[in-house]
Each structure stands twice: as C-alpha cells, then as structure tokens.
Image 1 (cartoon, rainbow, N blue to C red):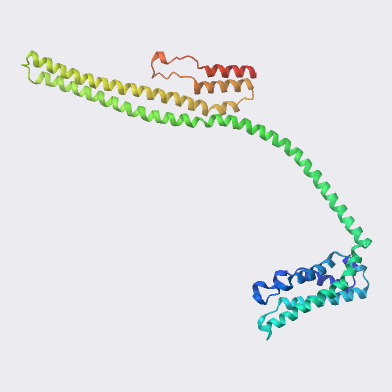
Image 2 (image 1 turned 30 degrees about the horizontal axis):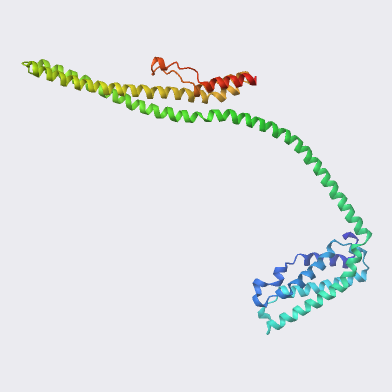
Length: 337
C-alpha cells in the first residue's frame, strides 16, 4: 500500500525504515563512552525503536493527512535525538555528565510523546480490515507455498527412498564381496614372511652342503698326499673323528633342509589363499547366478580352511581329510538354495 501514500506518508515510511536500521549497542555506546554511556537509557531506546518500527508493516495510507503530518514531525524529532546520542562525545560539552543526563531526560519525553501519538494510530491500523485482509492473503500465499513445497519434497523423498534402498542393497552386497577380498592381505603378509624365512634356510642348507663337499675334497686330498703309515689304532681314531664331523654336518644340513621345506610349504599355501581371495570379487561380479556365487564362496572358503598340497610336505600329509567347517558350509549353502 506504499503507492497509496502522499508525500508526507512516503517521507514518514522512509524515515521509519532508516530508524529501524539503527543498532541499540551503537546508540548506547558502552565500548565508545565507557562510564558516560547511555546504558541506563537502553530499555527506553529499545522501546522507542520498537514503537517506530511497528509503522513499517501498517497501512499508513488509512490515516488522515494531518495525523500523518504529526507522526512525521514526531518521528523526525525522535530521529534527531537518537542521532545526537549516537554522535555524543565527552569532548563536546563542558560538563559531559550533565549533558548526558539532559539527553536521557529528552529521550523520556520523546518516548512519552511517541507513545501518546502513535499508540492510538497503531491500535487502529492493526485492526483495520485492509490489514487483516493483507495478513490473510499473505498467510494463504505462505500456506500454498508450503503445501507445494511439501508435495515436491514428498515426491523427491519417494523417489529418493527407492533409490536409497537399491543403493543400500548394492552396498551391502558389495561390502560382503569386498570384505572377503580384503582379507587377502593377511595371507599375503604370511606368505611374504615364510618366503623370506625359506630363503634363509635354503642359503644355510647350500652353505652347509658346500662346506661338506669342500671338507670331503680336502680329506681325500690329504689321504692320498699325506702320511700313509697309520697304525690300526690311529686309523680307527681318525675314521671316528671324520665320521662324527660329517655326521654332525649332515644332521645340521638335514634340519636346515626340513625347515626350508616347511617354510616353502607355508609360503605356497598362503600365496594360494591370497590369490584365491584376491580374485574372489572378480568372479562374483562376473555372474549374477546365485548358485555360481555360492560355489565361488565355497571354493574361497576351502582355500582358507582346507589344508592344501604344495609339493614340499610329506606325501601322507599332503592329502588330509576335509575339515568339518567345510561340511557345515556346504550344508548351509544347500539349504539356502
């Protein structure tokens, strides 16, 4: 209804908008003035700003011209006194305290004049049919916007819920598949440890074999080029010493060779398990058939729990019975299908 206002009404509305932008903290000036601030008048300043700001939303065009002119004069006066407070400085007066008290008294008079003049007009305008119709129209428009927005949100939520359920199902399936393949790193670490240990035992076995071969060559050389007039007793003693030395060397070499075989066996087994679990996800994604997925899961489980032949173990230990857990898994998969 701003377009229905006369010149004074438009000036009044513009002035009301400017006053509404004033900050209470800036007018009080606690940080700027310290003890000379207008903190004691803060409630009054808030009431003045509140009663003037009420005019912004009211249909001022319904008031008589003289009333608008009087309101404009009062609001101008209030704006001038608020501006004086905003620009107040202790250096501007000989007695700053007395000047401050005078300005606070002026604020009281301003508030009283505004209240006596504005209160009847505000009360009348708030109950005017035009304002009530405007408020009702705004409420109806807001309600319609809310309803349209709610319907749009409901439609999006319905589609989003279906999408979310599909994504959740996919994520659960993927998490289960990837969860299996992620455990391959444990077997990779074990395989790496056993490979390093096997290499050390292999080096020890080869070293002992080299020492044994070198010792045998040296002894043969000494036998044919050295002293030949051995007595029976000295010959027996020398033979026993050689036998003990070579027996000890042979025993240690056998232990090293067995340890090498054991670590090599564990390396092959864990490497096979790591390969099986690493390729599990690829095989599962390659088919949508439930029976095929179950078969892949069963074989992957066998790779983890079933003892495997590596070629480094004893023949009797290379073909152990199937663990009971595999029978349980087979039975579970059979019931699920």
